[in-house]
Each structure stands twice: as C-alpha cells, then as structure tokens.
Length: 382
Ligand code: P1T
Image 1: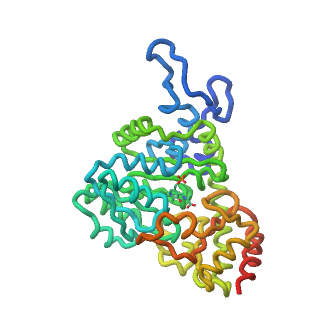
Image 2: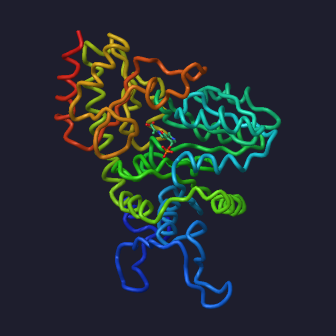
Image 3: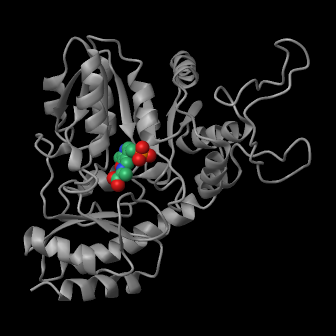
C-alpha cells in the first residue's frame, strides 16, 4: 500500500487484502505450522511458520506502512525484537545506549549480551554533546528511547542520527511510548524503529509482541535471516490481535493524549504532588522539543508525591480505575511504581529509579472519572 495515505487510513487498510480464497475482509488467522508443496521445494511463498506466516506478513506490512518504512519484522515480544537487532553487532562492537531505558532492555544489554563480548555504555541522550563525547571508534549502534521509560525524557532524534552516522553507527529508536501516530523516527534519520507492540500498537493488554521497522534492504535481509534462525516469532493469533488493535491506533492515541493532558494538569495542581513529568506540560524540560518532534505528548505520566515512597505505594494501592499493574498503552488505565516493578532490574545500577516515582498509563476512559479516582486515592495521603 502506498505511503501517500494518512496514518488513520493506513491503520485500517495497510497490509490487509481480502483473502484470495474466500474474500474474507479481515486477514484470517492462518493457524498452521506448515504448508503443502506442489513439488519438492515448489510452494506459494510459505514453507514453515517460523519462517513466514500469512497473518504475520499482513501485520508486518501494516507496521512498515505505519512507520513509513520499507520493511518490518514482527517478533514474539519487544525484548525478542531488541535481541535480534543486537545480533547484528559482532563481539568487540560497542553500543551506546540511553541511560533511561526499560529495565528489561538494560538487563538484556548488561546481563546477557555484554557476556558475549558486545560493549555497552550508558549516556544521557537528551544531551547531544554527551552522545558526541561518548562515541567510540568501535561504536556500531546508538540505542535510545524517546520518550524514555519511566522518566519521559526526550531526545532530539535528528541530531543524534547525525552524530551516529558521522561515527559510522546505526541509530535505533524505541518508539514504544510515542507510537507511530505521535512520532516517526525513520523520517528523522533513525535506522531502526523498535516497538513493544504489547503496548499502544496492540492497545488492549491482550497480547505480547515486538517489531522492528527499517528501510535498508540489505540489513533487513540479515534481520529476516536472524528472525528465522533465532525463531522468536509471534504466533498467528498474536499477529491477528495486534493487527486488529492497529485499526483503532490513531483514535486511541488521540484520546490517550487528551486524557493524559487533563490528568497531568490535575496532578500538577494537587497539594500532595511534588513534581509531575509530562511532555505536554510547559514545566517539562523538553516541552519545546515535544512540540517540534511529536504530534502529541502521549498517554504516559510520571510523578513524585510530597510523601515520597510510602505515599506512592498507598496511592498505587488505592486507585480503583487505575489498575496496579506493569505494562502500558492499553485502553485501560494502569498505575505502577517503576523502582520495585518494571525497573527492578536496574536497581543497584547507575540507571536506578527514584523509589517514590509513580507511573501512570492513562487509558481511553472518561477523563473526569480518572481524575475522580486519583482524587480519592490522593485524599488518603496525609
Ligand atoms: O514486554 P516486551 O513486549 O518484551 O517489550 C519490552 C519493552 C521494550 N521497550 C519499552 C520502551 C518497554 O516499555 C518495554 C516493556 N515495558 C514494560 C513491560 C513496562 O511496563 O514498562
């Protein structure tokens, strides 16, 4: 499908063709592991479902279109997608990573891949000069999240792309928090876009998945080889659910942004709250960059209470509509404490998170109901 269509149209149509057998409008769940061959090694493009599956093909086409990329590959999880990209880096190569990333990403880099001879260093990518200074002759990949998980810091993608490319490195951007509705890193110079499709892309907290989108055909061929060789692929049902979620991505992101903006203002005005981090508030240190680089500030909010960790734990227990749970990006609102939950694996590292930080994934419910829920939970904090 051409990329001339707007994102709302692509979200509904990209990758999805009426089924050639029945005319089914929605891509069927091709729940098969293998495919009959007409003769030895003569087939219709599908041999075995680790290698390719038609439901996955449809999802991959949709993901590529949404990010404005030539190619996309779907994986069993966001971590599987990151791991497969990192297999492009040979032992002795250096990866320069942002210093505020999902705890599992840090764990994969520091506790798994570093053991195979890939070197990692962690830097504040919000500071362009810090990235420049941390580049090494063997830097092969610069890796960052923007907005970051959980501090919601922003990085100037175009500026970092220039630095990475000048140093002969790729730039990979984890676009999970923004989604392609709010930010398209390939257009800003990134080489890889990564998604935990578990989050906004799937959007309904019912499936775990990951994806990589890129333009370079030779690198894509290598990654496709790795996808098949390693085998961390999603099943057909997971691909179907993700594809179904994508159809409403644009609608959902608009409502996530609207609701989060209202919740952020409410929190900023509340006496029990010390500090609110949200790219849509003028108090955010990169408010201007958010306006320039993103089509909206997103659905994620982090905040610190006057009462610190004890108050944070109380509020997280007391909300009713905001479910206390890990993950994000679903239609329902979630609340969590990153330090003991999603970012437990960065404890005792330089990436450690304030134990009193509260993270909200603001859903698509009615904003007034969400605010009422937070109000009653905050009222219990002395
Ligand atoms: O969970 P998985 O689909 O494997 O995706 C990992 C991942 C990658 N990148 C970012 C920015 C993420 O936030 C995640 C997963 N994050 C959570 C589960 C969380 O609650 O933060």
